[in-house]
Image (cartoon, rainbow, N blue to C red; front, side):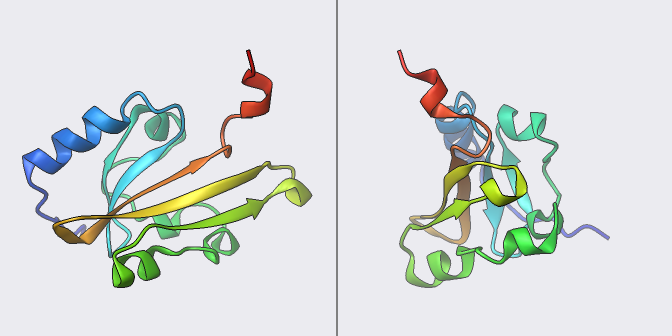
Length: 121
């Protein structure tokens, strides 16, 4: 049975205002790793509300997860990932705690889905 988490409307509105036009997947996540909100790029990548992000993809892809550290310290954490040996890209992934919401964080990456070097003017 899927557990429900209460998220106030203001937080959900702020998430969508900030991230719906971001070109890479962004998710609002509970400390349990349940996705509470997802932007359109995240939905296009196969993520959705109610899924547990730690169960998506291969387990080794989650070894770099810094969510617990971000929540404990209430500071943004990040990791540099080089996925080129497995056919991916080099990218940076972030976990941002949310002031006033100690059990929630924003998670996204830059460079994972898009090659920004190819987008230069």
